[in-house]
Image (tube, rainbow over the protein chains, first blue to last red):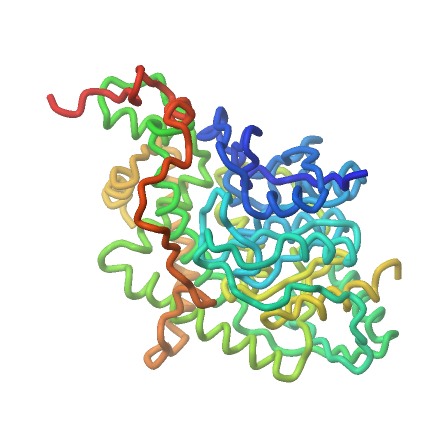
Length: 378
Length: 93
């Protein structure tokens, strides 16, 4: 019997509506299927359903079918409705959702999975990842969707995409990102402590390291993410596809009213903030500066990985979210993204398991998944 | 950020905020200005920009005319269409 996979609504499946959680695409049915989904179906997996996301994946964890702030795909994997799910990690939303629902999520190294067929926002950081109940299941699905795709200019040409979840972790070293740990609430800290203890029991050295560049990484990533999203969402104009306002008498009103009515306030805020970051007079100090800081963060992360095999950190501040007004969303997402931005801006892999996040150096997914596996059920 | 500058950004991005939304957006800019100040603490004078973290390749195809999708299917994606075109309001007055 085929394994049942859910696909988040920012990933295209021909013939199945793809809304990206937006009124802008409420009646949009794509004409082609994302490469990652094609690879799964070619390997005997069946697309069970599309799962809801927050508008373009920009919010905390996305909409939920039950009204709870958990994340639709993560909830369905946790409930066993599907065997696994694919989701686009744009700004950490799936990692937060996995932590809240206590399922495993792997965001692989940038360029590992083709983004052909993804409704793109922040092309330089977004990456398709896999939700499943266990590290083994994540690895199994990731191995099927990883690999070079000539249709995607950011797709890497690595020789091998096998993932081993049984690496010997004894003697490895894991760094707890102290500055991120300190920001978490007591329950999340307890999850990190428990995870660290489980690793120590397997012979892993776990110790705290300073992580004083988290705010810098987050601010720079939010600037880059908003700027790229501003450009990518300029294609939605009410003409070629998607929503069109009924309230217009000329072309200018068609554009403005379509976009104003169809995007939610968070998306509009992201567009406006990103547009300002790209504007004359701000470009150098804001956007250009953030591109340089990206290189600094990569070097700082690599410096940690010269001594450690992985970084252990929260994926989010607390173990649940309360409903909030959309007008507060921009700053709420900004605050929570401090935990996820380091892996987003660097394109480094991250695995969420047991409610906590492991970040690794490029192509170290096997080590992250092996570390996650030895803590399962503890 | 001022209301006037914000209106310029709205116009540039084909968006229109209500006065209440504009007020919220102005406070977002104010809060972000505080946070952006941390970027100045990083010396990037000798650091190259990093647009992509991994090498990229141009996606090219043979210089041949191809029709990946049926015209009819593409026309149906639009909100309003005629026989062979998407309908938009008159552009030239």
